[in-house]
Length: 245
Image (cartoon, rainbow, N blue to C red; front, side):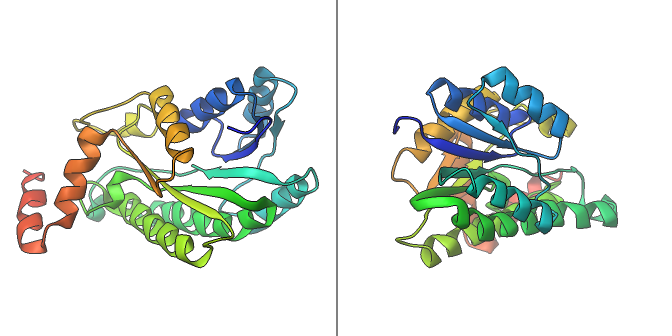
């Protein structure tokens, strides 16, 4: 990793984002930490050290994101932008509140779109933009509901951007499995191959330093789901249907 690399982490206040910030800070990188919670961000930045900056924003509010990007650009170019911010509400499609579903779409999918438009403006030439999907976006599964649909959209968007920004921005896709966070704590079903945020951070940094477009983990979960998503519907849908029983 280049000395004194500057990394902008969006969704840095807890979970994977906070673990990633701690891991990158330990390498000597300068961090720009973003999330909605201004007080928590300021405290976290101070905890990590004087070289790190808190830049609160709301990805669902384009004006908020634009203002943050302007402030960041004024400090100089960024080497990497890693977007992790998302919200989640488990349950079946028929049971989810319509307003909550709209909020999930706004934050997870529209928010990622906003970041995809803004991030290249602050990146150095050839810098990296990593967007966070999920293995939940590989194929429709019971209780994935609107969250999984938004993550499928993020995966598609990252694939599009990889082609559109080729040679200008190094676009990457992060697809985690189950990670022990406040989001997965809402689940009332078995979550196979659960990993800690610290393990997730280690996998992400290793993956973003490699040449692979997609960073996915843990492999004992992601490869079977990739296999399932590659099957024709006549084979895949009966298998996913069994998960409802």
